Length: 319
Image (cartoon, rainbow, N blue to C red):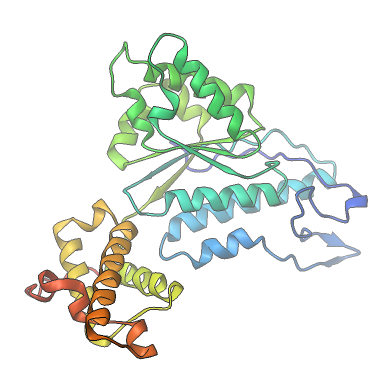
């Protein structure tokens, strides 16, 4: 599948709008009297850059952004523009940031004037597939209608093709494919799921690959990235790891990566570990009877439980 196969498009702002798109995005960087104005990038791109890892995903999103923005410049110069094709496939394991990136893309496309609202409608098989003939098409069209002006994000999209030839899931696929043509410039469709399952799924309908020309691959996080995610999650909640607790958590994460367990949750797995540690810390401090500000903020090895504390040092894996 071609990773980047965009076409220029989008409405160019008028001179009266001062170079701003209707959704209130920042002015474009464009030649003016022989000079260039510095363009402030959309906040969605800054937030994307702050995400841990995902180097290739960030690179592709910036390519999309650049392509759309330069297309606006071309429009101002009366150069040829054609409708934009932005429907996508996201492949990656749980907890690798697929939903987060989809939400940021919605905001980015809104700021560029590609989408009118930029909201995210997240659905799964149960939201699209009905119980009788004709029900599936109706349910799927309802979700598409909700997503107009924004992004329709179908999680675990491969489940739509699991039931065989007589399963109503195939009707949902056909309805989604038709909608990418009928509402080509009114919403963005993102089909998301695990790597291998999505590869098989895309072969079930010849129209999928041609109508979803963009593919973003979300890799699993390595040990260093998982630890960085843990620090960020804790700082957001005014917690931090003591040096001993951080060393313990890093050792545990190495073992999870080594055994392949980390790929089953990635950032989600880290969040669950931290939330359990916060509950254990609360119980420890309550039994203690009082706590200083530093103690309220600090997670200690005991808060991660005896299972982690008893881990044997694992083999070295990529940090």
